[in-house]
Amino acid sequence: MSHVTEERLAELGLSLNREPTEEEAAHLSRCGACASSLARDRALTQSLECLPQPETPPDFVGKAMARVSRAEQRAPGRSWLLLLIAALLSASALVVPIALILVANFSAVCVGVATGVEYLVAAVHLVSLAASKLAAALVGTLAVTALAGVVGAGVVGHALGADAAVK
Amino acid sequence: MSFAGQADGAADAFLVRRAQAGDRDAFAALVVRYQGPVFRCCRRHLDAAEAEDAAQETFVRAYVHVQKIDPGRPLLPWLVTIARRLALDRNRKHKPTLDVDAGDKPDPARLEDRLQARTELAIVANGIRTLKPIEQETLLLFHVECLSYADIATVLALPIGTVMTHLHRGRAKLKALVDAPGTKTAVSQGAPR
Image (cartoon, rainbow over all chains, first blue to last red):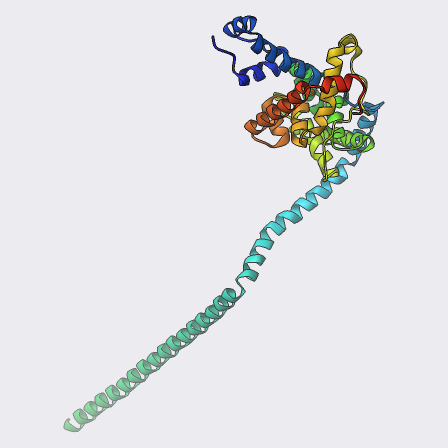
């Protein structure tokens, strides 16, 4: 087997518990360069694992649990406050985008409103026009009907008068 | 890696479930178990008093959100993520440094009789300060807190590949320092650190 790659040696050296494969182990037992490189990597790992670390302050657990208790007591009030904030945020999540859209497109909104008003006026005009036409038509129809009635009555009357004269 | 918390995942899951059911003693047991890594994480970014406060706040938040914890997943990365975020919030101009001087003494049973190891340890302890903050943090999360690549990636909000790069780059720099001619002599003769 050729030398164990540098990457593999680094990987093996990351932990003191990582074991090489049988083939790698056989090579390491013969190759001083690879064995030395792995030994250096493992020594570094050992040093890193032994680095002095800051100690946890005394009675850390007691103090932390005291704060936990205080947080627990505050929790109901805070949850109402959070609910209120959540409700306000939800409402603003609806209102704010609409307001932003309106502000950002103010001119377009104005044109839209004006157009809408124009359409409304036109519609009212059309309805009133249609209504007046309908009324006129009704009046015309009534007038024609009345005239026809009068004419009819005259004709009938005239005919009856003539008939009586003949008799 | 031989972190007890990982080996005791089942115990963690049990304690988390008990805490979710309202058992404060179970939660206190979790605080006992993880106070070290959480405090150390904060201490890397803050002074001792601020770090203590941030570490306690970490556990308060964990308790408030205990119902969100998935008992089937390792707890430490979740706690360290909260702790790191709190610490960084308190110290925007963070420059993580390993506080060797303020720390406790190295384990004498492991080191006392090994001058070579002590010399190398001193080089590494000083050398780690010269690394980039992200390399320092990656190395410490991996070798001191024994987090996996994936967990470190979660804590640091980085891709796993980037975590591996930082880890190997940091180690390579430290190895170069250890191997540099004259370094060991200087350290063992008590040269200024």
